[in-house]
Amino acid sequence: MANEEQKMNEDEMEERLDQLSESWFIDEDDMTLFGQFAFKDFPEALQFVNDVGAIAERRKHHPEIHISFNEVIIETWTHDVEAVTAKDFELAEEIDGLAASGQ
Image 1 (tube, rainbow, N blue to C red):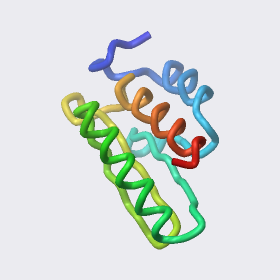
Image 2 (image 1 turned 45 degrees about the vertical axis):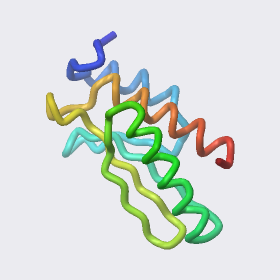
Image 3 (image 1 turned 60 degrees about the vertical axis):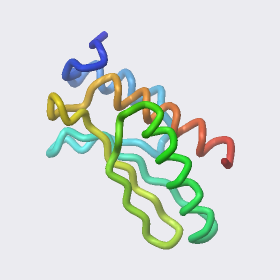
Image 4 (image 1 turned 180 degrees about the vertical axis):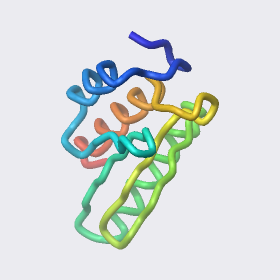
């Protein structure tokens, strides 16, 4: 498997994607990892964004986060190598855990 800072090949990404919730997909055009999450209302979505921000800050790996009323979209890739790496999947796994716990 790729190290944290090494670009992952298609097979590696598919293998890791299979371990995530169905909220995640790979944008093959931009080669980024996307997660899409729906919530009851804006305050719940905003709390999720704040919690994701805390995770990102602790990991020193910061995704793009988009919020629209009750929907949050997270886009991540490793900027240093301009590609999806193991760091992105590790972040996605932790975000999945957050989403599954209901915060």
